[in-house]
Length: 58
Image (cartoon, rainbow, N blue to C red; front, side, top):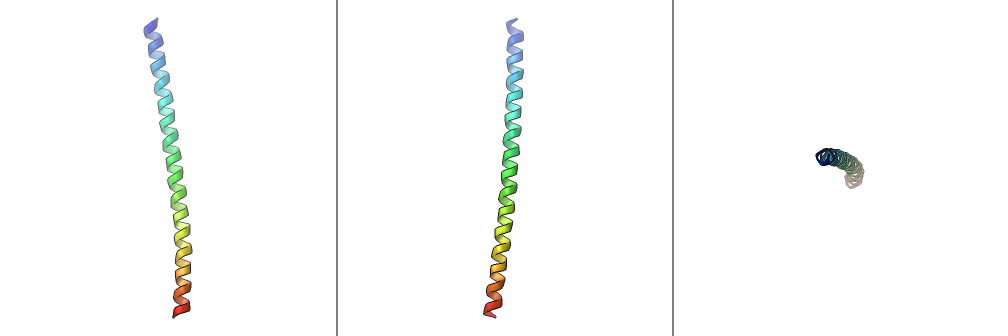
């Protein structure tokens, strides 16, 4: 009886750990995607600003 309870506890812990790991991976991926998109937007704005400065100075 105790062995069965032990096995069920281990399987439940494995499921919880697996769900937690997938959740962490998903959040990290979404954060990375958000960070990359923000960087792209900032880079495009900076590039446009730089082009405007070049246009003014030439």
